[in-house]
Amino acid sequence: MGIRLAPSAPMVSHLLFADGSLMLFKADRENAEEVRRSILNLYCSTSGQRTNLDKSSIHFAKGCSAVARNEIKEILDVHKEALSEKYLGMPTDVGTSVAFTYLKDQVWKKVQGWMEKCLSAVGKGVLIKAVAQAIPTYSMSCFRLPRGLCKHIDGVFEGILVGKQGR
Image 1 (tube, rainbow, N blue to C red):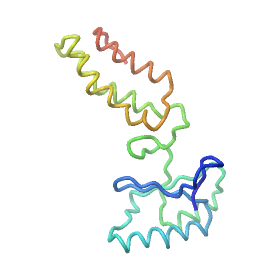
Image 2: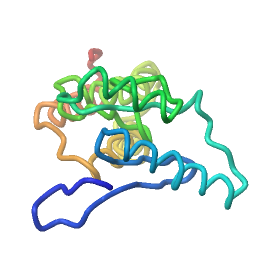
Image 3: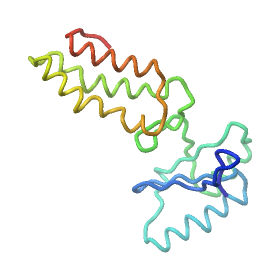
Image 4: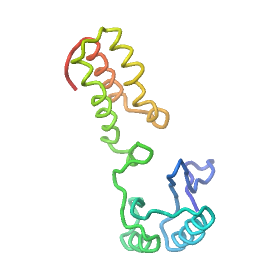
């Protein structure tokens, strides 16, 4: 069970972080039953925790048939399919052109009020370096951000420093 990201890479079957779990397996009845029986049930019985199925979601590869999808969702009792949701604050659909739009929005939301405040250029520079530049840091540690996005964010910071409004 699991996936191999490259021919020489090890198999990855799950990722765990805080109270979140991501399980990777081939979409078939046998693997779904194994996940349900051996992984979820065993984890719950040994840890004393329960899986919150209302918060759980499932994502299928493009080639997975509708019949297989429905069968697996029934076996796991997980009916919500994740399309463009986030995991650990980042989008699950990194391959799309709008995947990092949330970074633009977060940066803008954080800095838009700074233009109206009576801050010196040095004060604005400190806020940008200490607060705003930290926003994309985690995403940058996981993904190579598009050059256009980086230029856009730099442009927002520059606009703050010179006092220009605009997104």
